[in-house]
Image (cartoon, rainbow, N blue to C red; front, side, top):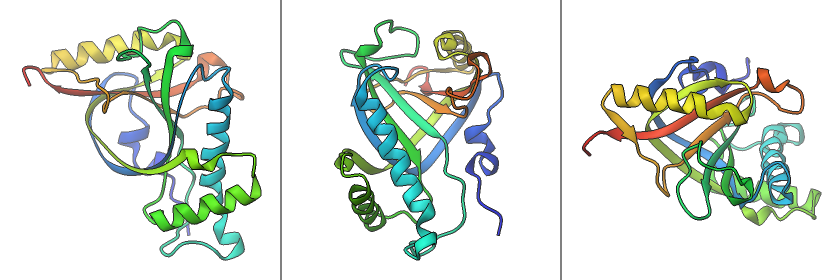
Length: 215
């Protein structure tokens, strides 16, 4: 049976064009880790990556030892995503120069068969395998993002403001405004690995929540 690749099946979520589009993002299940600090240098972010990928691949590879959950199917682990804000206000993707102020939620989407029971079992397995990790930082969350504007940003992360301005103008031209708040944050989906890809070739989905002007 062919593996389910979320990026290919749900192209509206993971493969937007390089010009802004409006999308209503449905409910999805994620493993998520919250943290703060510069993702380029802080140990907390590095540990979050190890936890997220450790849990995600433990679930994916559970079939190898016969512990796969009920309803298991073959799939490709979805890409890393990040929700971003700052410790003293809203973050719109353009207004931070000191990255140590970042507060982030890093997350990876999970297949529908990943329940609370599956998640707790997987945490126990990973904790035994890598006791140095604090897997209690991970949580299983259901997230419905709702109405958003998004774009495929190509290039360096620090060049994102130009793409964000395009999204903002497009939203306004169509009767919407940004709706950034504590519960609705600047969102990035990382389709490229910066360790293996030149900065100018990075592909990142940028997504901002919106609402109708006047509401």
